[in-house]
Length: 387
Image (cartoon, rainbow, N blue to C red; front, side, top):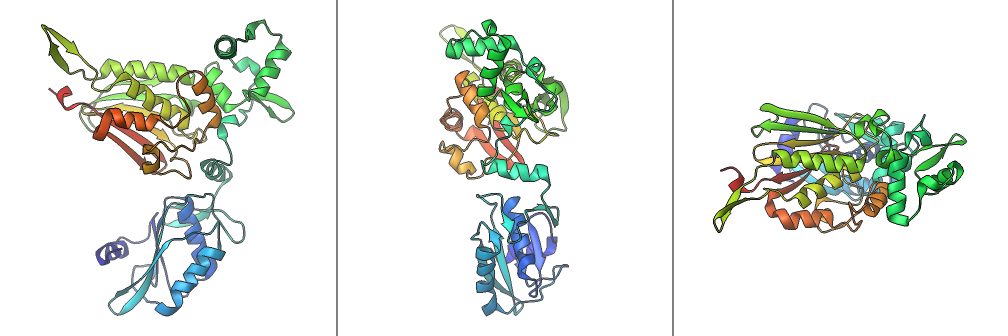
């Protein structure tokens, strides 16, 4: 870390990714900071600095071993941040750069899970802890029960088409007990308080009006006249239905507004999509399959601008993955149930090829980003689409 960057951090003060501590900070206090950064977005811990950003200094030869011991013994699982000693104005400080953790959730030695909120730390709530376990692949929300539901919330025709097409089973000819037994064994119905209710994945794939129970599962579609979200809004729709319906209907909406550059072939002008249907469809499958459905206040958004298509889904990429890894086809799915059924329905092949195939088709016109707790795919139109 450069001196200029350190001075910028000192000047901007404490925040979601920056924390100051004096030399007399207790090990449990430092461990709490490390755990909260690891469980959230990562961050930089500056030791030998007062709350107002003034350098108070440390005794350098004591600190590196002390910090290493805290990382090994007071943080569970242990972490290995980048630790460096920096001298400014004849005073030393310890700079600890803590990346976003790849083995969440992290906890302090006393068994408490901490997250970073603004410039403070707090213990994770039940929902936040659940999301941390999801990101680690230890809990799968897509087979969680949806309270207050039963088999009547499922569409029998959709179930019949699925079972008949994939397994040659005539679902409609089965009696109710046979149907419920099949659905329970398939995790479409799950046990909850001594009865069967519909699971999250079952509702999303085969439910009657799934947005009644899970309003966060709809897609917000919007078209803007310009390149910024503040520009004139041309059209806006909220797309609802099961996941296959969301994929198909949103693909149709995107194609309706997609610029179509043309070229002359022989004596005829031929129009082509500036982004292929296969790429659009793959990006939408990725969004609905891998989003975090436990984030009940956030919806997937599909925004069209004059120069690009942005598909933003709630939830950071899974724990062991990075943006660079998914570009190479590495996969650690958050929603194993959804992935399996979308594979059977021929929307996905479960091999992690989606992102690499889109990159092959789009090249540098495709951008992947993590923005807080959101994941965004940006697909830029062909340059000749602007003519």
